[in-house]
Image (cartoon, rainbow, N blue to C red; front, side, top):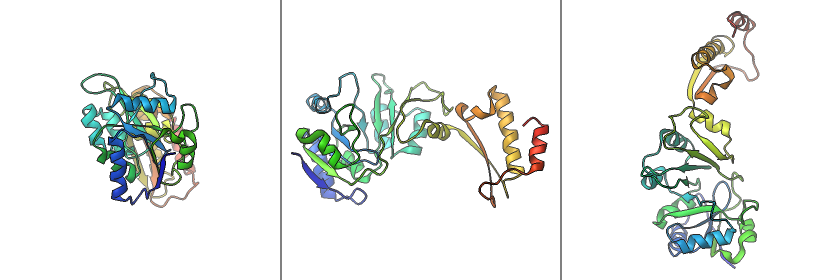
Length: 279
């Protein structure tokens, strides 16, 4: 059976980090905690090791293995400068539950990259000094494990060591997004392809890419919602789309108030004036 060690994910022991990094360098299969689910990690530059990962998971060769990275800069070192859309998503959601599928700047096969949220796992990847594959610690088609016990039950003695960081905080896999290198800058749904919707919903990603316009007044009952309505109508007309689909086309227009009360609506006079304008 594999060795199981308890780790403090947020204040990790440097000796444990170095031991886990050494195990990866030696070509061992290591189960690591992440904020989403438990992951199976191994060095990516040894075909014998990656073949063992596939055999352990019963994963077909047609399905690529994603990489773990310690930072956005490490990803750019491997792929070249990130396209603008990918950079916006990385700055918003890394470290965190997002896997970006990117085409290398020099050409070649697209690869998935993720910067995990837990300090322990990120430090292990950084100290390993070799490229690391990261995939869920389960047999393909099975439930993604959210505890070390579940990972042990799924993979058993097919792995070498398991680091137990407690239950996964989010409990759902990362969202996988493909960003073609030739994609336009942040432009809503046109700039990305969601391959798997995990913890982050597609709507959250689209909103993160949108140019945000926020109007603020005191109570958010007249001036700011009227400005929001006018801006929405104007933008929709310019873009040739409906006001309800602006976020899909890269724009988020909202209103707020410095003294607004939850559940309140727009003032009757404001609604009447906007209705006269067809808004």
